[in-house]
Amino acid sequence: MSRRRALVTGAAGRVGQAIAIELARSGFDLVVHHDRSSPAETLSACRAAGADATAVQADLAHVAGCDAVVAAVLARGGTLDLLVNNASTFVAKPFGDITAEEWDRTQAINVRAPFLLVAGLLPALRIARGLVVNLCDIGGDRPAAGYAHYSVSKAGLIMLVKAIAVELGPEVRAIGISPGQVAWPETYDPALRAKIANRIPLKQAGTPEDVARLVRFAALEGTYLDGVIIPLDGGLASRY
Image (cartoon, rainbow, N blue to C red; front, side):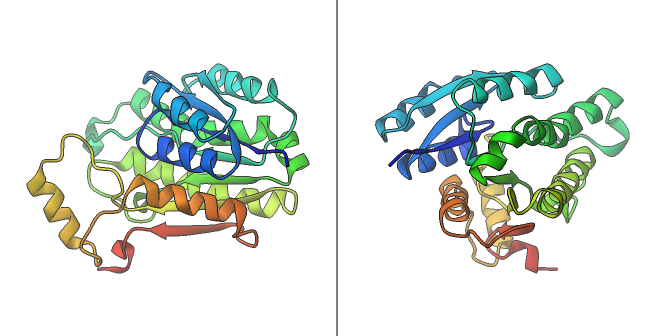
């Protein structure tokens, strides 16, 4: 039986790495996108799980970078079962201090790149009757102070899920996963982490592996899911 094929963006570490490894263990061959961080650990783990895994480096803030990722995927075959748009930029900045350049880069990486990747890989996705998974965010519905440019970009990514489902079905499905706290920023000290975790109804943060398992389920078992945004936040979105 031939292995399925997937592209995961931003897969050198954290959530993207966990997704790539979970997919490799579940019968997918991988194209692993990365920007500046080394993908060596991800590739090693995927290959140890039996996957044919290769890496492509590109800055998704630029159209040329998106084109390079599309070309790398198509060079390895004409079908694509799963596209995971995980790569994202997340930088805190007070509303009045956000520059036009910072705004544009955030929208380019977080919204335009997923659109360009879907558009460029659309024939391959259609042949495979593939799935697009966008890693959205609770901030796309509930903005936090200091992240206006990020929250707006994630709101756009949520709408992109719905647009894909409406316009590209039944050949292509799309879902969004909206994580809460699943990967701690390195700058968060133990006291801040405890404070944040205490606001979550389950009183604990999630993990990148929680996201990875949901991606696997959507791709292999949840085949009637389409056009929906699935919260993965321990109940955080339900509180006042």
